[in-house]
Length: 190
Image 1 (cartoon, rainbow, N blue to C red):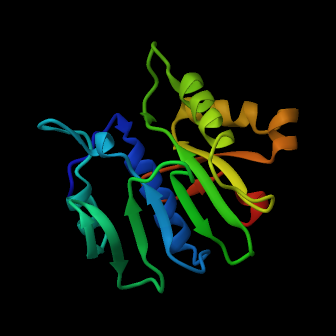
Image 2 (cartoon, rainbow, N blue to C red; image 1 turned 60 degrees about the horizontal axis):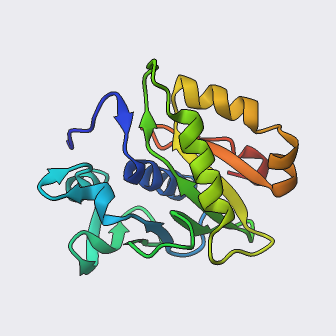
Protein backbone atom coordinates (compact mmCIF):
# COMPACT_ATOMS: atom_id res chain seq x y z
CA UNK A 1 0.00 0.00 0.00
CA UNK A 2 1.03 3.57 -0.66
CA UNK A 3 2.60 5.22 2.36
CA UNK A 4 0.42 8.27 3.05
CA UNK A 5 1.14 10.82 5.78
CA UNK A 6 -0.88 9.97 8.90
CA UNK A 7 -1.31 13.57 10.09
CA UNK A 8 -2.32 15.32 6.86
CA UNK A 9 -4.11 14.83 3.56
CA UNK A 10 -2.53 16.39 0.46
CA UNK A 11 -4.75 18.38 -1.91
CA UNK A 12 -4.44 15.81 -4.68
CA UNK A 13 -5.65 13.10 -2.31
CA UNK A 14 -8.67 15.20 -1.28
CA UNK A 15 -9.66 15.70 -4.94
CA UNK A 16 -9.18 12.05 -5.86
CA UNK A 17 -11.05 10.75 -2.81
CA UNK A 18 -13.97 13.07 -3.59
CA UNK A 19 -14.05 11.62 -7.12
CA UNK A 20 -13.75 8.04 -5.79
CA UNK A 21 -16.66 8.68 -3.42
CA UNK A 22 -18.82 9.78 -6.35
CA UNK A 23 -17.94 6.63 -8.30
CA UNK A 24 -18.53 4.36 -5.30
CA UNK A 25 -22.03 5.80 -4.82
CA UNK A 26 -22.82 5.45 -8.54
CA UNK A 27 -23.61 9.17 -8.83
CA UNK A 28 -21.86 10.05 -12.12
CA UNK A 29 -22.98 9.82 -15.76
CA UNK A 30 -19.70 10.47 -17.56
CA UNK A 31 -15.95 10.82 -17.12
CA UNK A 32 -15.02 12.67 -13.93
CA UNK A 33 -12.30 15.29 -14.29
CA UNK A 34 -9.72 15.97 -11.58
CA UNK A 35 -7.29 18.88 -11.99
CA UNK A 36 -4.00 18.37 -10.19
CA UNK A 37 -1.14 20.83 -10.47
CA UNK A 38 2.28 19.23 -10.93
CA UNK A 39 3.61 20.96 -7.80
CA UNK A 40 1.04 19.04 -5.72
CA UNK A 41 2.76 15.84 -6.83
CA UNK A 42 6.43 16.74 -6.96
CA UNK A 43 8.78 19.71 -6.74
CA UNK A 44 12.33 18.93 -7.79
CA UNK A 45 13.15 15.58 -6.23
CA UNK A 46 10.63 15.94 -3.39
CA UNK A 47 7.49 13.84 -3.82
CA UNK A 48 4.51 15.42 -2.08
CA UNK A 49 1.96 12.83 -3.17
CA UNK A 50 2.80 9.44 -4.77
CA UNK A 51 -0.02 9.53 -7.31
CA UNK A 52 1.09 6.59 -9.46
CA UNK A 53 1.20 4.07 -6.61
CA UNK A 54 -1.88 5.60 -4.94
CA UNK A 55 -3.99 5.21 -8.08
CA UNK A 56 -2.72 1.66 -8.61
CA UNK A 57 -3.45 0.73 -4.98
CA UNK A 58 -6.98 2.13 -5.33
CA UNK A 59 -7.58 -0.08 -8.41
CA UNK A 60 -7.18 2.56 -11.12
CA UNK A 61 -5.07 1.92 -14.25
CA UNK A 62 -3.67 4.60 -16.52
CA UNK A 63 -5.16 3.64 -19.91
CA UNK A 64 -4.33 6.76 -21.91
CA UNK A 65 -1.29 8.67 -20.76
CA UNK A 66 -0.99 12.37 -21.49
CA UNK A 67 2.16 13.36 -19.62
CA UNK A 68 3.79 11.51 -16.72
CA UNK A 69 0.91 10.65 -14.34
CA UNK A 70 -1.70 12.72 -16.20
CA UNK A 71 -4.24 11.03 -18.41
CA UNK A 72 -7.30 8.77 -18.45
CA UNK A 73 -7.65 6.23 -15.63
CA UNK A 74 -10.02 3.26 -15.60
CA UNK A 75 -11.34 1.08 -12.77
CA UNK A 76 -12.85 -2.33 -13.47
CA UNK A 77 -15.81 -1.68 -11.16
CA UNK A 78 -17.04 1.56 -12.76
CA UNK A 79 -18.67 2.42 -16.09
CA UNK A 80 -16.90 5.77 -16.47
CA UNK A 81 -13.29 6.89 -16.43
CA UNK A 82 -11.35 9.42 -14.40
CA UNK A 83 -9.41 12.09 -16.30
CA UNK A 84 -6.48 13.57 -14.36
CA UNK A 85 -5.14 16.77 -15.92
CA UNK A 86 -3.43 20.02 -14.96
CA UNK A 87 -5.67 22.56 -16.69
CA UNK A 88 -6.85 25.26 -14.26
CA UNK A 89 -10.03 27.28 -14.27
CA UNK A 90 -12.89 24.76 -14.18
CA UNK A 91 -12.56 23.38 -10.65
CA UNK A 92 -10.40 20.68 -9.09
CA UNK A 93 -13.18 18.10 -9.41
CA UNK A 94 -15.85 18.34 -12.12
CA UNK A 95 -18.45 15.60 -12.35
CA UNK A 96 -21.73 15.33 -14.24
CA UNK A 97 -24.19 13.77 -11.82
CA UNK A 98 -27.21 11.50 -12.29
CA UNK A 99 -29.44 14.23 -10.86
CA UNK A 100 -28.70 16.37 -13.95
CA UNK A 101 -26.36 18.76 -12.18
CA UNK A 102 -22.60 19.21 -12.36
CA UNK A 103 -20.47 19.12 -9.22
CA UNK A 104 -17.72 21.73 -9.39
CA UNK A 105 -15.37 21.59 -6.38
CA UNK A 106 -12.19 23.32 -5.30
CA UNK A 107 -10.06 21.18 -2.98
CA UNK A 108 -7.61 22.04 -0.25
CA UNK A 109 -5.08 20.02 1.70
CA UNK A 110 -5.15 19.95 5.44
CA UNK A 111 -4.15 18.52 8.76
CA UNK A 112 -5.96 15.47 10.09
CA UNK A 113 -4.95 16.28 13.68
CA UNK A 114 -5.40 19.41 15.76
CA UNK A 115 -2.46 21.77 15.98
CA UNK A 116 -1.83 25.17 17.53
CA UNK A 117 -1.06 26.77 14.17
CA UNK A 118 -4.40 26.11 12.48
CA UNK A 119 -4.58 26.87 8.75
CA UNK A 120 -8.12 25.60 8.19
CA UNK A 121 -9.78 29.06 8.10
CA UNK A 122 -7.24 30.34 5.59
CA UNK A 123 -7.49 27.23 3.40
CA UNK A 124 -11.29 27.26 3.24
CA UNK A 125 -11.38 30.99 2.48
CA UNK A 126 -8.79 30.55 -0.27
CA UNK A 127 -10.83 27.71 -1.79
CA UNK A 128 -13.99 29.82 -1.64
CA UNK A 129 -12.21 32.56 -3.57
CA UNK A 130 -10.96 30.09 -6.16
CA UNK A 131 -14.42 28.56 -6.52
CA UNK A 132 -16.07 31.94 -7.06
CA UNK A 133 -13.59 32.80 -9.82
CA UNK A 134 -13.69 29.65 -11.97
CA UNK A 135 -13.74 30.38 -15.69
CA UNK A 136 -16.82 28.34 -16.48
CA UNK A 137 -19.90 27.42 -14.49
CA UNK A 138 -23.64 27.16 -15.00
CA UNK A 139 -26.53 28.12 -12.76
CA UNK A 140 -27.30 24.44 -12.12
CA UNK A 141 -23.80 23.58 -10.89
CA UNK A 142 -23.32 22.29 -7.37
CA UNK A 143 -20.49 24.46 -6.05
CA UNK A 144 -18.35 23.05 -3.27
CA UNK A 145 -15.15 23.40 -1.35
CA UNK A 146 -13.67 19.98 -0.50
CA UNK A 147 -11.37 19.56 2.51
CA UNK A 148 -10.11 16.64 4.58
CA UNK A 149 -12.37 15.31 7.29
CA UNK A 150 -10.80 16.37 10.59
CA UNK A 151 -12.10 17.69 13.87
CA UNK A 152 -11.20 21.28 12.97
CA UNK A 153 -12.50 21.19 9.37
CA UNK A 154 -15.73 19.51 10.50
CA UNK A 155 -16.25 22.20 13.14
CA UNK A 156 -15.55 25.01 10.69
CA UNK A 157 -17.85 23.47 8.06
CA UNK A 158 -20.66 23.12 10.61
CA UNK A 159 -20.27 26.81 11.53
CA UNK A 160 -20.08 28.13 7.96
CA UNK A 161 -22.58 25.91 6.07
CA UNK A 162 -25.65 27.76 7.47
CA UNK A 163 -24.25 31.27 6.94
CA UNK A 164 -26.62 33.43 4.85
CA UNK A 165 -24.26 34.19 1.96
CA UNK A 166 -23.10 30.57 1.73
CA UNK A 167 -26.74 29.55 1.34
CA UNK A 168 -27.58 32.37 -1.07
CA UNK A 169 -24.53 31.62 -3.22
CA UNK A 170 -25.31 27.91 -3.10
CA UNK A 171 -21.80 27.04 -1.94
CA UNK A 172 -21.23 23.87 0.04
CA UNK A 173 -18.35 22.75 2.24
CA UNK A 174 -17.69 19.05 1.81
CA UNK A 175 -15.39 16.99 3.98
CA UNK A 176 -13.79 13.82 2.64
CA UNK A 177 -12.13 11.04 4.61
CA UNK A 178 -9.76 8.20 3.74
CA UNK A 179 -12.70 5.84 3.27
CA UNK A 180 -13.90 8.15 0.43
CA UNK A 181 -16.91 9.18 2.51
CA UNK A 182 -18.31 12.62 1.68
CA UNK A 183 -20.13 14.81 4.18
CA UNK A 184 -21.82 18.15 3.49
CA UNK A 185 -23.46 17.50 0.12
CA UNK A 186 -26.43 15.46 1.32
CA UNK A 187 -28.96 18.17 0.41
CA UNK A 188 -27.92 17.84 -3.27
CA UNK A 189 -28.10 14.06 -3.31
CA UNK A 190 -24.46 13.27 -2.62
